[in-house]
Length: 119
Image (spheres, rainbow, N blue to C red):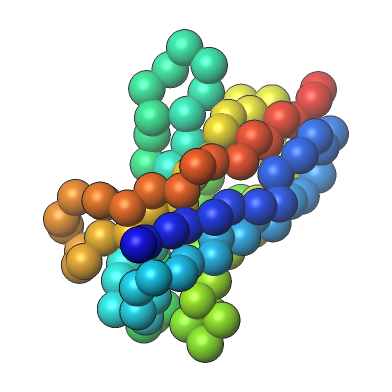
């Protein structure tokens, strides 16, 4: 059974940083594209960014470009989302997800981790 478990969320002041982790089990993590998404209260889930299976290509939403960095360690079956210069607008539940390749639907999701940024 495939499972993704996020961790690292919490409460941080504006301007602060957090690093989220996403640990995968039950699949060969290195075969999959990993994405990060977020959903704020009352809002649609939105794409934050993604990283290719090998880690050499990343994509980011304009809203986080230059502040967030996605990385992965395939040897540890773990992906990361480093968030710097956090803003109250970044408050959301953050999810990691897997897709078989770039451009296809993400079909495995974690349970999410709450990030709250205070002003």
